[in-house]
Image 1 (tube, rainbow, N blue to C red):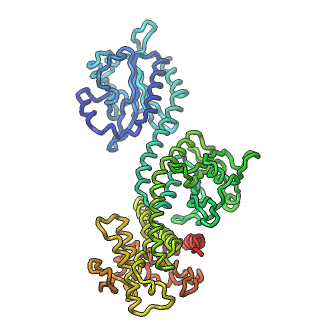
Image 2: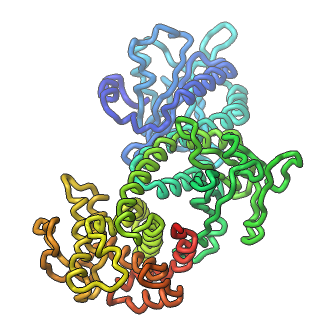
Image 3: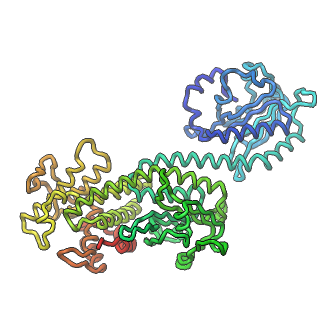
Length: 605
């Protein structure tokens, strides 16, 4: 213990110790038991256990538990055991053991040879009146050599209670106890605590996500990471308003094995399907019964189970599913949001194993943690959907399927563009979360356009075209009130500028318009300079492509849907004129997924 008592007040007042991620009572109780048993097998009068932590890229040891039969309850009022932390270096005995991984058996700490680098700090003995003599210090390392803790045993006792050195036989006994009884439990407990701490950190990040689909994808990703699983899917409950039937619809699927076979930047094919909530499928059974289900091998289900594993995906992809853990996502009131299905737990050698009880507990805990963010984003989605329904009431083209498709097309285009431009993952996640919502509001300004113009089944005359173009400014004003959030700014950019052209063509509008000069009750838009190239916000340039793609590929009252080949050809032909060439490149690189999304989200009849 390199720090002196004089430093204790400073240590107590500082926040240095708060960097120790291991703060669970579960850990402290386990360490108390470990120290108690270690002292029993070595007949030690006292001892301590230290846990490593990082602070400002430096490594420290912090004392977590301390026991002393002689002092017993006569310790200082301040619990000094919670206050000591010191660097992992050669100057202290425990620091030396932690640094070198060597066991140190010292007969008399007051007579350490001068040539050794470490020394005994006598301060605690002076304060407590206790006399430390012999000391046995051992590192507790994981199977991969990571330092988990350091155990320090003090003053071995003979049968008469006299303090004596620790014998070699005692040292061997302690080593056997550590290897057989301590390390497995300690490693598992520390891993669980680390993962629970990870869940706390993830929960903070999930609280910032605003789009429900973005949240669902992140939930699946983080669940798999927590338990080191190779694959998984997440499903959402959907309701058929006509039949009243509830079904499960896949939202996202992930598979690391299959993804490793892809070229950089590529993604697995987009899939969309739904199925009834009943006992015939594994997910259906979980959803119906609202109970988690753990299966060690889906190809060896008991004959009396009502559910069966659908092997079709494995057959089509060549992937082999083995272990599976499926858990329902339930709201605070017990309502079913959906189901998470995690596939093929992996050990440290990347071999498929069953989901242990520890991993099941982690998944269950995380499933509870994500409920509040799910409820919040579901409410945001519902409110957005109701708001956008107003546009649909005014303009039959502005349907919910249309804005949902434009949003998903935009995410695909941006995701590939971001990969091509080496954008950081943090920036990608943040941009996509906002884009998913903001893209839906691209034409919200049409609520302010007359029905006579919106529903006209023919070309506009110049005056009508000018009135129609006002929807960009009208939409932008909806996001201009008060202090703007980043989402407000992106929504405004998209609503205002998704009809700009990359080359600044005269067909584009409204340009670098000053919204403060826009008269909401008027019939024109302010004159403005041309906006072109990267002057146009990235989000608006993305939605420009997504919106045109959707408009051309679907029937309107004034035209039939174009063939997909013609639509793709038109997008390519407009590269460098109407559209950003780099975004067209990203669009073409993701066209298969975009086409699949287009086919999966049908217009309402």
